[in-house]
Structures are given as structure tokens and as C-alpha cells.
Length: 268
Image (cartoon, rainbow, N blue to C red):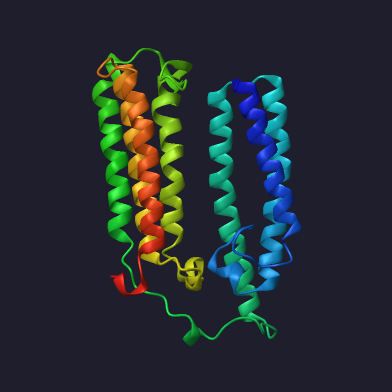
């Protein structure tokens, strides 16, 4: 699949996701929509947040589709997608919390469950945030140490055989892009410190499982970017990129396993 075809596929996938989110905006479910604790507690909040999420997905996917047809590079396209995901999560979570708090202050909030019905385990979030920050700090330290050995343009995208086929300037490719990728699991961990973000415990996912999943994904992402960094300074071969990719998928699988298997009684 060519880069343009892949970009068009991602754009159309996001467009379909936006249309599905709009289609299910009036019905809470576990598969489609912006699902955080605040939206689960109220049909009105679910509808409003998912209307925003669906419309923004549709608009942005059309913009991405135009960029793909125009022929924007894979690197710029990927950064655009990552930035959108982060902004969408930030705005959606803020909107859900705000709308829920407004409803809580109103006289009509029949669907809001009593506080005694929702028991939020007190899993400490700080260790997971510190581990993720430590991973990023270690990576950035390596970037500083190897900076003078890096070429002005570095390889950041690789073919299935591990050969580089996409390049960026070293600041964007080895600092901006990795930080944006790291920011996704970190943000999802940070937001979960608010009990309202994670109030839907009946779905079988615990706070500790959520924290572990995002921390494992953070480690996998950082390990992958470290491999890319080492490749660009000539410390490892192209085969290492393939091994790093496999490692990322293994980390994802293990993270999903922990996400689904950590039980409430294991909470700290």
C-alpha cells in the first residue's frame, strides 16, 4: 500500500468513525462513542459530547483527506492525526466534566446515581505517571547525548522490511513527533485520576488495569523511538526496527491482557 493510499484509508476510517459516533449519540453503549465516567452517568451529557466528537471527527477527517489527496508527507500526516487525537481527548473530557457538573447543580438530574452506588478504588496514580515521565526523560537524555552524531534529516518511517522511506528534520522527527506519541498514553493516565473519568467500573476494567495498560504502551512507544534514534546514529541495523515493531505489538498485547484481567480486589 502506498503512502497516499494509507493516508486516504486512515481519513476514510476516521470519517466512518465520526458518522458512527453521530449515529449512536442518542444511545449509550460500550463500543461506539466518547466513553468516560461523566458521559455514562447522563444521557444528556453522552448526547452532547458525542455530537461534538462525531462532528469534529467528520470535519477533521475531511481535512485529512484533502491533505492526503494533495500529497502531504506521511510524517506531517501522522503528526496531524496525533495532535487531533490529543486535542479531541482534552476537549471531550473537559466538556463531559463541565456538562455533568452543570447537570449536578440543576434540579433535574434523575439519571445521576447516588454517590454511595459508585465505589472508586483508591489506586495511586503517581507511580504510573512518574514511570512514564521517567521513560520520556530517559529518551530525551539519549537524544541530547547523541545530538551531535545525528544527521540533519533523520529516518522516521520504515517499510515492512525495515528500510527507511520517510525522513524529517531531527528536531521534528526525534523530539516533537516522539513527545506527541508519548503524550497520548500519558494524557489517558492523567485524566483517570479524576473519579468521574473512570466511574464505569461495571465494564470490567479497573483503574489499576487502565494505569498499567497506558504505562506499558508508553514503554513500548519509547522503546520504539529509542530504536529509531539508535538507527539514525548508526548504532543498530535496520533489522532492529522490525524487532522494535514486534516488541511494540507484544507490549500492546500484554497491556490489553493486564487491562482485562486486573480485578478490583487487586487495586492498591
